[in-house]
Image (tube, rainbow, N blue to C red; front, side):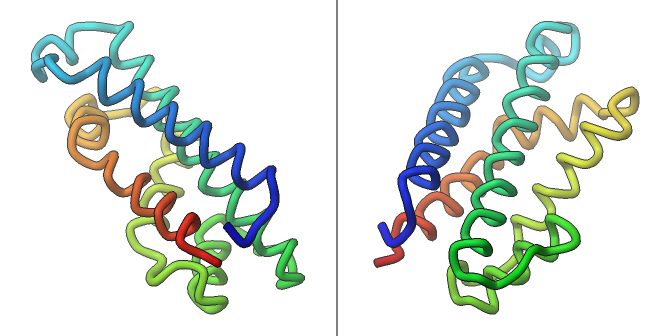
Length: 136
């Protein structure tokens, strides 16, 4: 890995978050998820933390590359593309937007969207980890 131990530790934390979330919801149906405040809250928190990790890593890499701070998390992802750290800003910009939704419009989180992300989109977080890990 090209980047420092902080990035490495954050990637390890990301692995833990997505692994535990995936395991926790492995055999859970949407109906069970929708009815369970505990499962919804767990998923929201794990997805928020995972998104925050992506943003933290992006900002750390921009600082290490002396690329200057980005005004938004989406711009940070776009800057990583320009630096050839990641191939595309998608789906990472969508992840940062979802994080904003969780943080700023938390009373309106649609359980169907949350369930879909937690059950079907954890690979997006793994893809980010793999792209950062692949840097030499």
